[in-house]
Image (cartoon, rainbow, N blue to C red; front, top):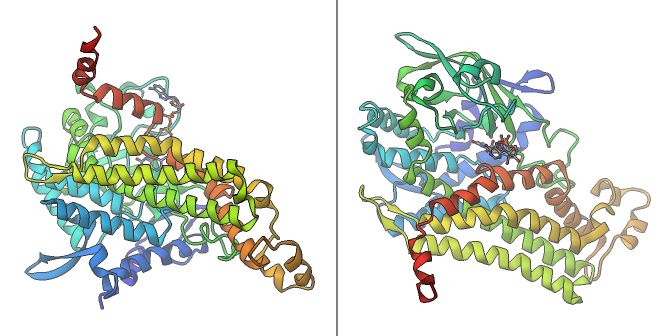
Length: 478
Ligand SMILES: Cc1cc2nc3c(=O)[nH]c(=O)nc-3n(C[C@H](O)[C@H](O)[C@H](O)COP(=O)(O)OP(=O)(O)OC[C@H]3O[C@@H](n4cnc5c(N)ncnc54)[C@H](O)[C@@H]3O)c2cc1C
């Protein structure tokens, strides 16, 4: 037994500066974090389980021995490898109903892509290939938990540029020494940062040659001196019972703003240094993006299936499934899930080798699924609301009320068509946690924005599409 989970939790006892409710907290003992930590730990322990280990890990030759590594670190050199990656993403997504999106398999996939594609950076920076290889191997062999963060603080989106860097809180290099570079500034949103070992940080904007101080790609250890992670309000606490908030209590992946107050990044973790063109290539790397968004749409599909399952159970439990308009809504939920499933399969079967011999999923199908997800998910939540209506707030405050003095009355008034009151209340509380709780609202926002501005992403799909074939279709008439 390798006790991956225990090893992971112990790795977070590292003096990191995680701010919650006005003070620095220890994520390994604070009840706002321990429910989720226990979830992540059990997912890591699947690598030790005879039943699950082949689903989420592969055996590789590591440091002169055979070692299991998580499949998100597998560079796909065949369609079969790509399918192994999907199976691994599905396994963790199913174990968390698609509600945990940054279980590090997304960031690991990007890292794997940059590593696989490293030689193409030679023209920009001859040190990149060696640096990314060293870090990739460390992250893979030590099973490190990673997250990616790119956006600048939301201070004033109407202006930009290095001259305003201090004012806008942009992350920038302030000085360099023989040890590395010092950076100051902010970054957002860093989902799962408090649970991470390392943060992969780079700009989302294309900076110019005169804005080089803003244009580096960095690997930042989460316990770096001067790095503060400012958490939003937690969704779990000692007062949140698993039975009442099954998702909030176990799957709050937490989001944080990162404030860098004169943080030293050693040279070996400065992947790209003051190099706007290289950093732009890094952000748009076709291998990193294809592998990471493949994970994102596999997870999305599992989540949409989960919403369809909840919709079906809710409708059945109150006898509303007999109405045509409710059936239509249930059909729409299924169509969403099936569409994304079809696009996942299409992306894999239309996959191709790139010129480095990496087998990549077809990006246009992935992009389509990702962009559909930004409107599918809010619509799925709306559909659930229309199906369950007021029932979502007609639950006793806690399930434990059924054991109280008026439990027998609750049994009578909270039951459903073919379901007893406790089961029905559990179902509606689960649904509320997905559609109405703080975690539920955060998820709607997440699905709209996690990949960037949905409007600009859809416009980018149009802009990047090869339109010559579209034009040819009209040759029949014009
Ligand atoms: C819950 C959650 C978790 C996330 N986690 C991560 C993460 O872990 N890592 C990560 O890298 N990202 C993450 N993101 C995505 C990211 O942080 C941003 O939310 C996303 O890129 C959108 O940027 P913004 O929120 O700064 O919105 P803004 O860019 O500030 O947009 C605000 C409004 O202004 C408009 N706008 C702004 N600029 C322009 C422009 N130039 N042209 C036209 N319209 C404009 C937008 O359309 C929008 O209506 C997460 C997002 C959410 C919601």
